[in-house]
Amino acid sequence: MPSNSLVTRAMCLLAIAWLPDPASAQAPTSRDLPFDRYTWVTTHNAFTSNGLVPNQSQTIAQQLEEGVRAFMLDLHYYDKRVRLCHNRCTGPSSVPLADLLNETIRPFLERNPDAILTLHLDDFTERQQLIDELDRAPFLAGATFDPYSWSTPTWPTYADMVKRGQRVLIFSLNRDQSGALMTLGGAVTIMPSEDFTVENYWSLGTTPLQHDRSCYSRWGESRPLSTAGIEGKTGWRPLFTMNHFHGLPVRSHAYYDNAFDALWDRYTNYCQPVARRKPNYVAVDFHEEGGAHAFVEWLQAQPHDAGH
Image (cartoon, rainbow, N blue to C red; front, side):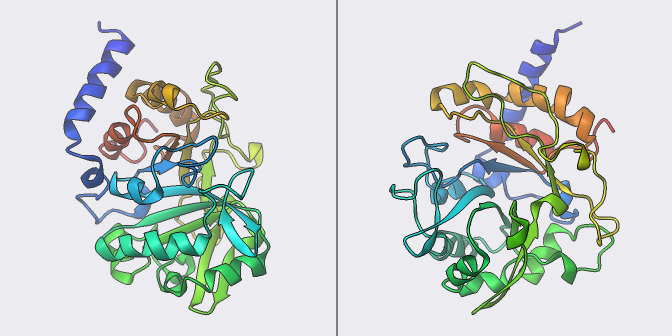
């Protein structure tokens, strides 16, 4: 009987063989499934590629071209703008949010009319500050996903979301910044993360010397990873973010963290047994290191509730 390590290595080779290139892998061939049946490579602190301690080695524009479709962004108010920054807001990666939206997100959506993107916000601003910033990106109002505009029994299909033009999902860890924000371009819908998602506690450990692969909810027992419903949306299931990164990002170690068998082990032996489903977002540092794209492609081929 083959060992588990041999099995996972074989799965890794097969997954890589299935993967023609990252960008094409992130455009689903079947778009007729409910949105919660899909899985996406997600970049943690996606904006920090040129910061002092970067979590990524590529700009968000480059990540998009490499097939990343979901981004974790920290927002802070500094120098009269809402900026993407982490700990300090004076570095070269600290661009205003509206600049990212106008100069990177909007052109990508225009070039790729079938793409759907997700923004996971860790927002430390005030509501009016965020509204003033979004006033500078009026296109966003017509592009955000509004769950309450759908009467479908489950999440709408990928194809229906594209058809309606709701191609940017925005979640915020700051409940005070959620809801319909009335901007000059119209209402920008931001969903509270704690209502519409579940996610495991984010850290594998502070340093690469630690590897805590346990998988438990960042919100504790009040919202377990197995939470099955969204209040007010009967039949809709929270989207699941599987976080898999260290507190201290080290690119040379990311190859090991993001290896296919490391991700497969975290999912199969730790997260799937408690979440009882596959993740929708696999969040990593240095996404191009290791096998995160191959792992997500393998997940796409698995039943939605594999092993339930």
